[in-house]
Amino acid sequence: MKLPVLMVVVTIALSTTIFAAEKTAVTLGTDVLTLGIPGSGPLTLEDAKTWLANADNHAELQVSLPLGLSLGQNQIKGLQKNPLTRAKVELGRQLYFDTRLSADSTVSCASCHHPQNGYSRQTSFGVGIEGQQGGRNSPISYNRILSDLQFWDGRADSLEAQAVGPIANPIEMGNTHENCVATLKAIPAYKAQFDKIFGEAGLTIDTVGMAIASFERAIVTGPSPYDIRESYQRFAQFGAEDLAELKDDDEELYAEYLSLQKAVANNPMSESAVRGRDLFFGKRVACSACHVGANLTDELYHNLGVGMEAGTPDLGRFEVTKVEKDKGAFKTPTIRNVADSGPYMHDGGMATLEEVVEHYNKGGTPNKWLSDKIKPLKLTPQEKIDLVDFMRACSGEYPVVATGRLPE
Image 1 (cartoon, rainbow, N blue to C red):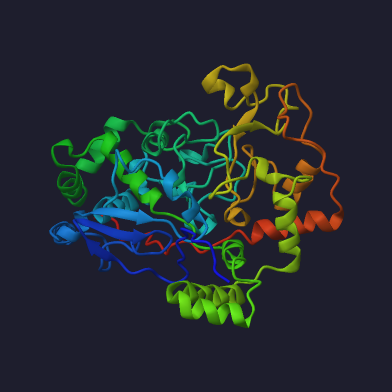
Image 2: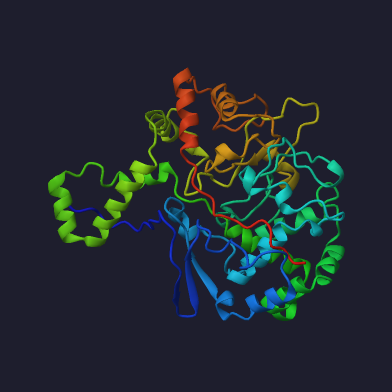
């Protein structure tokens, strides 16, 4: 028995870096880009200069995505205008965790999108300088390499635009772009990095956005039990004879089979999660009407009725487009690693995945603009459990990220 040829990138363990033709091939989803500049303590100017002197750190990266997300390889966003390099990703990492981007040096990007909280925060609303609360839940900042429009309402047309928005938001970082740039220029290790990486452009608010966006694009979730099982299904029905033939005919594919067999054993999906998977993608429940594609999101906007019972509801996407049907519509979040990023919905009004399932089960909250995709599901108690278990099985490892080692 021969398998059809499938273009699937399988990455279970750490990938090696391959140097070729002036580009460096890297598979995201590992910590190959995110461990910071080697050394300990605050980053000195000499540390930065030594790092910048290595030509390998400025080679354009040819990135591929890990198992599961690899199905979206052709949907990668932003790299034509802002190619990734190790130096640019590292600079973005420093900025992401640096509170000096805010007016009072108390808030960083990580304050609302922290790796310890699934690149979100366990608060209903984002919390900025002086403890001010925003009006929406902090969206996740991983797997953004497959997304262009950003924020719950899609008001930022790129990851670069999103990255600098909070700096000047009076509730978030409370700074100005001019003061942020002036602050960074006064830090020698930052100025040296910007001058080397961006050349004549140097340190501007635009290059700040490009650096932070580069780091965020490098934050990609690794293969989940769901991804591993889905890929293994191609081999699941093979008997001993079929495997023997495969071993003789295609050593590479047979090695993939052995790797996946081991991965499935080490990352099993429970029977409940498997049933939940069938519900999720099945016609009756059809979660995949919106949670679809490699990142399990359509990147579109839908009214679920969340918050629409308020006297003055948040109108979401409508505030950007002024299109009537967009009233109360918000961006579909990814299901990947969703178990880590509660509370849920744009208003953070649902504490658990169980509450989220119950909201869909009842058919959302009725209102004039409710999406036609939202209908009562009539789930049994066990089916509700199964759906939650499936969503938990969509969690993969995050890259290890250095949160310290910032310029002195």
